[in-house]
Length: 150
Image (cartoon, rainbow, N blue to C red; front, side, top):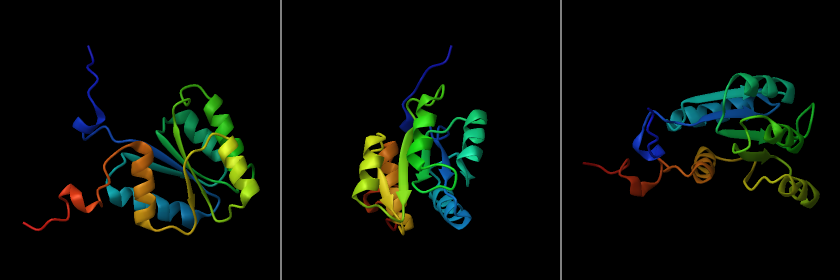
């Protein structure tokens, strides 16, 4: 019989992330930022919607970071597809984009995405936003005891 414990008390229960951006450098930078944070058990990257869809068929993700402008679909179209997929109704999304005008932002909000990060962003901005979305403590906050000298 399995007992479900709160996420905070199980250090091995770290979320998995899928990063979808058509720029490989952006994918790799985000991946490194997330790996270095130590907050995630797995960080997978994809550069097209079709590759990302293959990856979600084979693995469960808790957070998907998706670029708005992709070569084969808009990020919002990808999100709609994922939300309809079995087992992905509760996945969290972070939309990233280098260009967000009022029309684009309206499209993002209409797709149900509540979290947006505008490129370029720093490692700290990304980690802060991801921690907020996933409701996990930010390891870089000064009040957590990680940066205090003994």
